Length: 471
Image 1 (cartoon, rainbow, N blue to C red):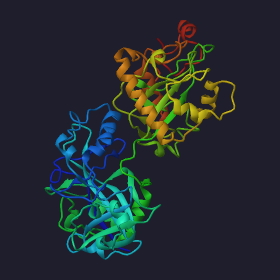
Image 2 (image 1 turned 60 degrees about the vertical axis):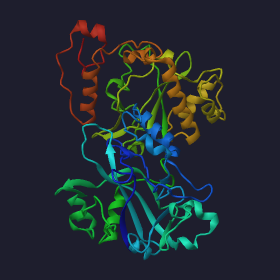
Image 3 (image 1 turned 180 degrees about the vertical axis):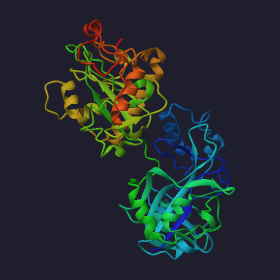
Image 4 (image 1 turned 180 degrees about the horizontal axis):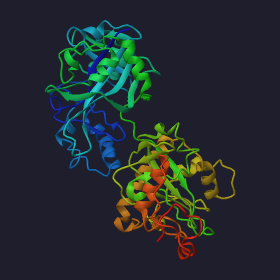
């Protein structure tokens, strides 16, 4: 087996911009380098940067950012053609076979092409680039550009152009084991004046054919000295392969229960909106937040559905979440920590009469055998952990964005109880302390008791709070 490490994506040298990445969720955007000015294309084969603008704006909106002001998207690129290579939609990669791609030209079926990129962190305090693996091809075949049939010209950047190099090649990858990574895998660090593969990874991979793991820029891509060791490491990373360019973040709906009015101790603590946290109470630990499968949720967006007298409403659609594993349970967190909608101002998922702001979502539950539409929704999503279908997720994201713009900040909850359909019997006035107590329990620690509960306090707070502070 042979394996080679290939740098891809727009950067300071080619495009004067680095694509954004979220260090918390390892979500990233794949933005290719630009074509040379004046490049001519076969009819229908030109791809311009404005085609990527929806993906860039959607990525920015997921984090409540602006593509130009916050991500520094260079708008002058929008009119330029891009060199869409690799093209994960078609699982192809092209190169010049007599120079940079000479080793790729010699590859056989089953060999590996590993893609990496230099990405820019969303965190403003991070000054260094994130050098990370972003995709993998298992080679199916390597063909000369001259041998590519006209019906397949649109599959790769090297065949889309009218003028091609005499030695240009196209790699076609095997389906089912090739694609863009669902999340980036960081590999680089700034060492000895340049970006290089981390020393621990160089040792674990068995080394590269470049001095001291240099990956900042190279005339010829480095090769893996021991591809089998690298592949064994990669399999341990448990990363999903996507046969597409820039798939949007998936959406999962989480059904929140109503407060129990009969329980004087009922607070309905979770989610902790103020801290961008969900799951630390353990209420969903047997289904959605199962600690053994929680890693599958990294990078997804959580839509919190709250039932109540005026139907099931979507009180919050989070940015992409990261997963924190404690000793006893899993927690998801997100940033920024914007408060949810008030229940009475949130978009309507469904009510008993079938009214909804999300028509595609209603079609998703129409085959459930329950007497009311709200009951159908609850039956479908009470313990569901699967992501919404792409079109339904797209509708949810779009409608929530329009709702936020139309309603304005006055629709936001001021306190956590505003997102509930009615005030719980016991409103928690010390959310920070409560949150820290749950985190301590999640890590197997006993929270400190502030003082012994008095008789007067028991009559006020109820008898079942021996481990909580009284007030």
